[in-house]
Image (cartoon, rainbow, N blue to C red; front, side, top):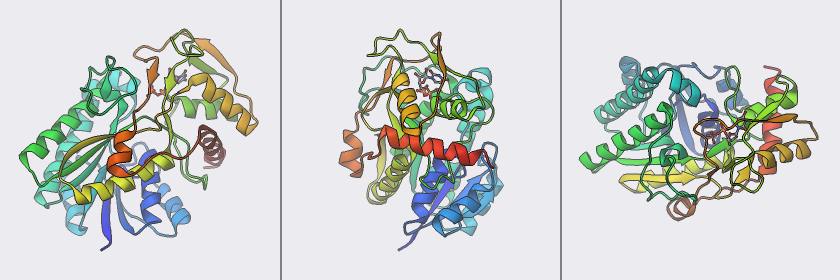
Length: 337
Ligand code: UDP
């Protein structure tokens, strides 16, 4: 039977790519987004890409009345919860706003799910929950660590809340997907990441330098104990990541209880390797200078991906070159919006 998947935050970078994967498969999609960090015309572009239009509600997930209406008007089978504030630096400036928003939206969602007997939830978590102390590659059996910023703590706290909820209600099924560094964009070039203001993350900064919006990239540190001295991350193509969510739907349909699962490639790429790959596959210049380390950054962050393979039957397939090509195609289109 066709399932209906609710995507809170589904107009954003990752949510919109999951929506595209679901619409091209046999799922009905309901997106709820307050458009605080996304554009409404993403819904039109999803229709252009997939030939199907998701149901869309512009609402804040902490708005209990709005959520109640959405759960009454639609029979939801699975929720994939993307809604939340996500800027690491801003979370340090506005911790209370981050805790209020990210925790409130999740608690209101959980209460509304319970009231409507919706038992399956996939949560957008992050590799940041491993903290500073665990050795790489990260495996899911490692303890969650001390996070370096309030954004990370909201992810860690929400994982704990969801785990406790699963102990209390044995019929719940929750998977926390721990994302590594999602980059790239849909092959159509019609959806992708659109940061507000100056990008915090590396790939959008690179694409904005390449297109001429910013003068040069600051590479934060070249004295780490890594092969070229720059930070090493597990960059994962957002379309691979989205397909991991489709696999997680199958999983929550068949199991109960709480699981955390890494979504990465299992391979590390340095900041400078990414910059050089981007420049060479796209034939563009990416001027950069070496800047001081950014506080809170680790030398290495990459996943062990055995659990995703074992439980979800999923692994990432796209290359760093694919990520660079697709990010660049999207940046050029985004200029026209
Ligand atoms: N980085 C950089 N310059 C930038 C943004 C990021 O050198 O303008 C580096 C950062 O220090 C880290 C890597 O790129 O080593 C990935 O950073 P990002 O913020 O994209 O993700 P994070 O791994 O911090 O979640």
